Length: 393
Ligand code: SF4
Ligand code: SF4
Image 1 (cartoon, helix red, strand yellow):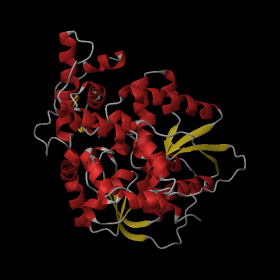
Image 2 (cartoon, helix red, strand yellow):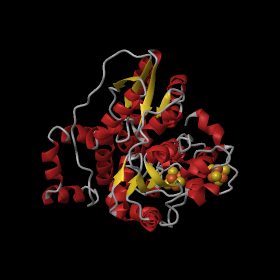
Image 3 (cartoon, rainbow, N blue to C red):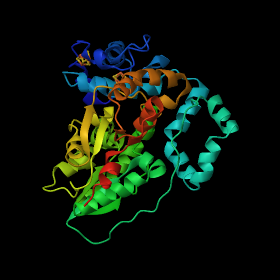
Image 4 (tube, helix red, strand yellow):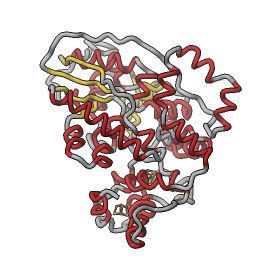
């Protein structure tokens, strides 16, 4: 195990605060929770003098990696890290392993499916394909549609430079987020480039491919550092991509390069907050009421909710900002057959809060949160960059 985290174990005082914030425990009583699965299990392993666990019960797979336990811990312990690391040694059958491997490599399927998106979207609704997905353990639920778009980027040299890393969902499913972000950054005076990087590694990390993630994290970090040396800021609009670059790479690589990368990564709205003046109009009619769901991985970045202030100033009259609920989808988690219902149960409090406030629009930064919220409420969901693009001067 990495030395950095051995030390961290001693900070756990068994206070159980992390348990109170775990969204899984309330709906799945067999789930032992972050304290037991994280620091307690690690202590047990150390006491036994084992290098790694030889086999861990599959119940660990129910950890969603939402990071709510990490955020809650008053002593800086990261139970989610131990869960991710130990998933490698989980007792998993061959069919579950295969299904998890398929979901972990969603970037490959996204690349293929977005070549001819119309055909892929049709095929994904085909009963035989759905049946096949069911056989390998993928839930029968709405899948986000694939889309393709050409991007318009200005080529003039500017002193302010941004390397935009959009992530899989925007690249393969909602490319309009990419063009909106380019427009916003360019309007703020940035020279924008799109990052030549595929997956951030999060789907692999949560699906027990720890070593593969470490490899990807190393490659991506080296590539991003080349741009950082040329004066680029790394900009993300996906909460999970942002969190992996800012925190998870550091946790799994434990090197200086990951620390340098983390200090140069900005969520789009975190960056906009630094601008002296914003390029949005106040002359356009605002939306009456919107509900902003703060994704768990944005909350875990510890930057506050920078988009909320900007949305209130320019585009929404009444913005209900809610960061206390997990939507339950957790990337690939909610697409797994055995976890689909649980994921909807976890999201049920959020769905209720949204329906009770009857907004005309839900706003969220995460692509899979969008899928889950729409399934749970039927209300239209938009990324904040898409909405603010409509308010550009
Ligand atoms: S990990 Fe943190 S919150 Fe959880 S029991 Fe230990 S000290 Fe308490
Ligand atoms: S990461 Fe989330 S689901 Fe996993 S133990 Fe922590 S709070 Fe629970």
